[in-house]
Image 1 (cartoon, rainbow, N blue to C red):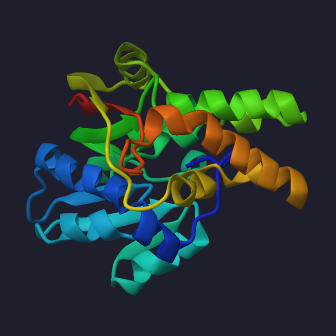
Image 2 (image 1 turned 135 degrees about the vertical axis):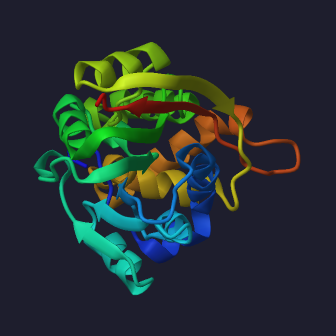
Length: 254
């Protein structure tokens, strides 16, 4: 993916402990992909290779691509072909029977150039299967961060670092790159987090919090958590998160 100032750096161990439920969305998405032996598939934004490894069990030849060096290293440790590549710098041309992407494109604030490169990577007739967090995803946390940013004089761009399309917006983006939409769905979710909310938002929104000095950082953390607790923490003390997912299956004509 193309890096912008709001993209965090990832710790594979921390991600595995506190964010594996995102990988679970990718496992579900394999049902849409239906990989077959002998196919060549690009996993764009492969992360630590958890889902890539599952795709490879089909017998397909899978290439993982990610912008984060530690995640690529973790994927390679699984024995995968994982490459450190920025999304806009993808040079694949008509090489893949399918491109798969789980929870990645929202980190690309200007997605059109990246989507064009992904479209170019498909063979004629190749398919794109993607899950993209959509409009309204993480609304409570993002609104709280924007409020705290205004209070503390933070960078408003870091308070809303994501691309969050509606299903029609995502469909139009893909069609503009030459892909034909075959299936497009929006799915609201409210998953239970495996640990405290801070373990999640402190990781994915790391650039927002580290813009402040240590004292202000702590205050920002406490304020965001206090603002979202009434809507994201249930009576038993269990944290949840508000997710909106847009899933798409598209195909390159030919």
